[in-house]
Length: 247
Ligand SMILES: CC(C)(COP(=O)(O)OP(=O)(O)OC[C@H]1O[C@@H](n2cnc3c(N)ncnc32)[C@H](O)[C@@H]1OP(=O)(O)O)[C@@H](O)C(=O)NCCC(=O)NCCS
Image 1 (cartoon, rainbow, N blue to C red):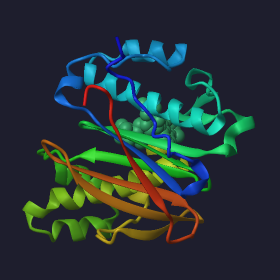
Image 2 (cartoon, rainbow, N blue to C red; image 1 turned 180 degrees about the vertical axis):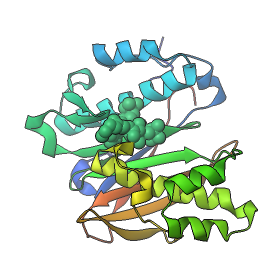
Image 3 (cartoon, protein in one colour; image 1 turned 135 degrees about the vertical axis):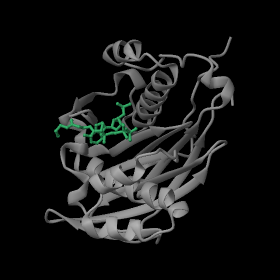
């Protein structure tokens, strides 16, 4: 019987053809009710998968690593389980000998897993499903610069969640591009409430280009952004909607 979780990377995927490749996976209700298969994961990843208490968290992790290993396997001409990944501060990298063969990052939230690869640019990605929560203004005060927060508070309260998530994914994608995650306080980076699809941010002597997007999930909108190091614009982005036999 075929594996219902079998994820297939499209044959058209060729790393050097585009600056960025985005693998976009969405869980269906049927998939979410089952455990994702551990095929292609390393022993360490399988041990980590076993430690998740909630199925959805486990599935997001397993699917993310599965897509990552399969796409990198196509780049390196290896089998997915043999892709040499090491993890530093939570971030997976290719082992040093292969480190510059491909840059990548991944993010998961709600029913979505996004994996981004680039032959040229160090990259960070973040996706967040919109969820209203009662102390959003207090969290906003902690993660925004003073000026960003003043602009946020000037908005009608009905518009604040949209502004919060747009700004959040932009900040987090920069922090993930740098590899520190929240090891750096997000209120130190100014990204502003700009709604342009792309913009530039200078931080700690580095220039980041940000691209931001929004898509509608079955329940709520998903906000996502990616940030890359450098000043080149425009860049090419190829998106692959990944499906499994269950979808
Ligand atoms: C990285 C971080 C921002 C992710 O937050 P999140 O919104 O919960 O998760 P996302 O779904 O967007 O991203 C998770 C993925 O990002 C990647 N990741 C983890 N740590 C990362 C880092 N430091 N930089 C870039 N990417 C990272 C991983 O692939 C991870 O998924 P996986 O473990 O399933 O493979 C957060 O976990 C963090 O800040 N971690 C680092 C904190 C830390 O170690 N600080 C110590 C001092 S530097």
